[in-house]
Image 1 (cartoon, rainbow, N blue to C red):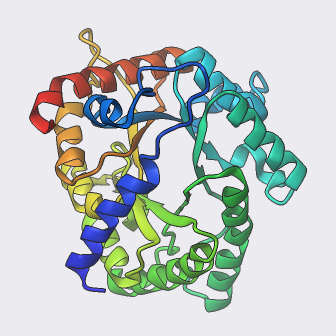
Image 2 (cartoon, rainbow, N blue to C red):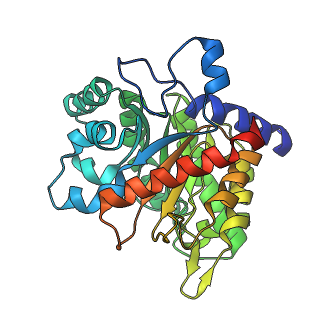
Amino acid sequence: MSTSNRRTFLKTSAALAVGTALPLWGCSSSDDEPGSAEAEASAAPLYKLSLAQWSLHRTLFDGDLDNLDFARTAREEFDIGAVEYVNQFFMDRATDQQYLQKMKQRAEDAGVQSLVIMCDGEGALGHPNSDERTQAVENHHKWVEAAAVLGCHSIRVNAETEGEGTNAEQQRRAADGLRRLTEFAAERDINVLVENHGGLSSHGQWLAGVMDEVDHERCGTLPDFGNWQIREGESYDPYDGVRELMPYAKAVSAKSHVFDEQGREAELDYTKLMRIVLDAGYRGHVGIEYEGDELSEREGIRATKQLLVDVRTQLKSEYT
């Protein structure tokens, strides 16, 4: 498949994969648009909102929130109808079918759609040692299968390379591990997404090159607005990075840290970023990922949600 055709395919499949309407559960939020197909089409928001579990990582690590209650919390406290899980909060339960079924049922009972499992701590998919690389691929298999049980469309992984070799060599190794994992995931109708998550993965052109080398419709990106530090003292331009990764995107992470008095993210121009996202043809979920210290986790989630709703309202006339 050529790069241009692949990018077109990814834009279409991303909209279908992550923009699926939620079932009607007798209650609706600003991001659930009930009604006839025609009414939904005309009233559908430019993008829907989801909640990344990492936004509540302190609460979860402190034991003040159980992983099984996360989906219900997203709905009841924040009126958000879709979530992205983090494997760290059920690390020893990836193959526990009873537990996964309970997670799935809790989400369904709350009218919440499970989108992604964010996977960390399973080894470097671009490791310079081929045996280590193979082990990392196999370590991720259980999360692919868990995602399928939960009804997610994707897992998010890291393009770790251990920093050895030239950029091109690291790119080839990352593509090798990702391709093998993607082939496994594709058989289960699961996508493998790579986030800009530090190191070379936070270099937009490098990661786009990895995607081109993998060249598989089930392998894409999850652009994060805020993760652009390549190494200490060197960061990539967030707007260039998002623009370079959006042709492959099947999910988007709206990272936030600090807000000004007008409710805007003080370090990132969300209007500019969301224009880049929408100009790429993306109409899926945008995940709220608050990681700041000035507001509590819950206050930060609400502030990020309000900002995304305000930007969506501002941009509606430009894209409809």
